[in-house]
Image 1: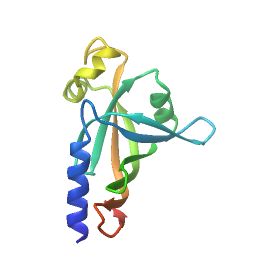
Image 2 (image 1 turned 135 degrees about the vertical axis):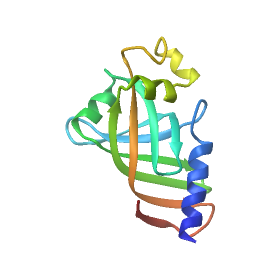
Image 3 (image 1 turned 30 degrees about the vertical axis):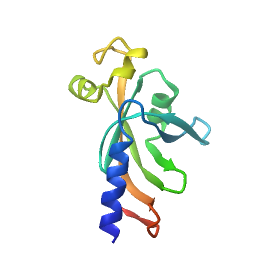
Image 4 (image 1 turned 90 degrees about the vertical axis):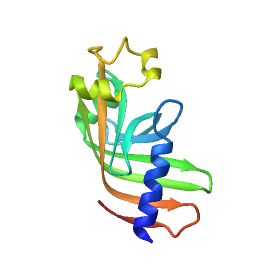
Length: 141
């Protein structure tokens, strides 16, 4: 049952990744308070990892530089609540930036090679999953 819920949560994350989708990313600010932002996940591998496009000078990138702990939440009413907790890092590798690029980022950057564009890579360490009326599951990866 637990593996089936993890698999289904990964499918839901995949369906809510890419242009036109949103999730919530929570980071710690300079004073140690949690801050939550709505953001589009660029890509994902189930619930194992997700990536986000942002600017190197953005508040998100600054917060990640100070503290690499984060949480991501995908929620839709009573249907699902997928909360992931783990580590996040800034990636500036040109190949990865190109792989994670999607069209809506062009509203903020000239292209995937823009010097101010970076990728935030989130890796899940633990999770709390409520998926389609199944019993809630928590655990570590």
